Length: 174
Image (cartoon, rainbow, N blue to C red):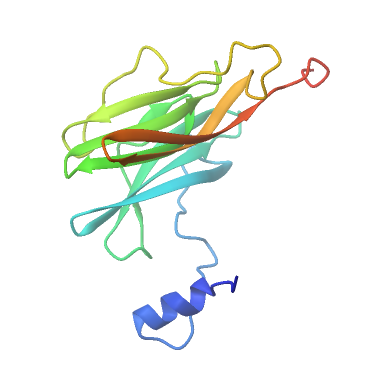
């Protein structure tokens, strides 16, 4: 398969001959909660606005999920309400209707995937008490310690979740 030159494609879309990535990236102005690195973004179009949920890592190792918005996909503004979710990462956001959102996120403390729901377009979210998906209870399973990086599709009335999993050997735990 032929690879796609995304910079050239974006430059064509914007009507220019060349495109240059920002030396600072699309998100900067790091706060304390996302000071170390950013990871695993998911972007949805909500009317004329693009909404990006992403994982932020702090230097102390803690993780959280924040939100940034954009009208053009190039200039992004971080929400003043960040971070929205503490102790979870790798968000996958599914939009079922304009105001009906589902956010699936991995919990670092138990290796499970939790579901947050919003019926007002992402302004407020439910607080889950139980995971929707957990590591296998089979001691020989490939995903016995952690499930993470969810991607969720909804089609034909059925939800499909694709995920990564892992089995950490006792020797690996230090």
